[in-house]
Image (cartoon, rainbow, N blue to C red; front, side, top):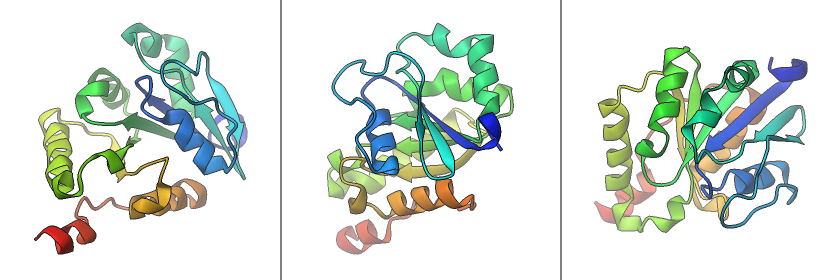
Length: 183
């Protein structure tokens, strides 16, 4: 169980990676403010069915994520979801901190629809190489999604099911659709 005895998930990432948009899609309502730039100024909780989602302000200064208060908050969550758009390097220090304090996390690669179809497998390989190169240890799942177009990628449904049903899926970076079209 997480904060307050219920399942709780925190969404972390740089400004404008789509954290608030993902939360809105998961809840089914446009409750979290979205837009370019810093729209989330402080931690905002949103109630889902049998879980709570926390929209965390974009990490534009490293210090905010490394306070004892933040670390205690991270430890109280059921799950930590790190949202990136193009590279693991966006959040390297955060990944290393989570690994150092032995907290598990998921990576959401959002805005995947912006990657041209013919480049998606190469993009996934690049992310995988960065994960190995940085020796990230605490990853449970990697999901390639588009919060604006959630039905475009099967990882969205797997991610939602994993978060809402407390199931453990092993992410498979092999995308059969991309393979069939471009091989």
